[in-house]
Length: 229
Image (cartoon, rainbow, N blue to C red):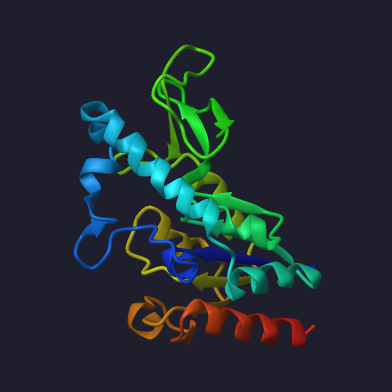
């Protein structure tokens, strides 16, 4: 069975009402990224950081998967599919995708402040100051902040190297190291790029660009791929 690897970014979640990264004004939901998404921010003002992600988590839980998420799940009827996402929401899983790798963490989980390998499901919709891991340290969001290593990168690189078909959705390909995954796909792999700015952002020749938002482009690509089987 052919293996389709899908790499998704903020654009696919934006159509479900989620702002998962900084906007045109450089802010993320009204905050400087440096104040809420770095280890230094956590050390300086953990209450603010915790509150920020508690609000984001509630928004994620209230959001619903959109047509692009559901279309990608539909691909599993005919292909082996692995989704690699930069997003920290669980919309792919809720749409039915069975194999999802979160490069930057998952907001519905918490982790130990001293050992990131210790992760836990968030009970309810918030992490409270005073909630502690089994080692006694404060729980924090299970999110890879700027300045931290991306533990899942090695696994993601290995997955990309096995792709028969590669689909990029809703990402500017500007955030590294994640953006470098496109360079790990075997030469000659059929590659689709679905984003309103795809043609302007594509770095490689031979990429099939669909300059549309995810809810338009992804169902079209999926329809083409399923029809070809």
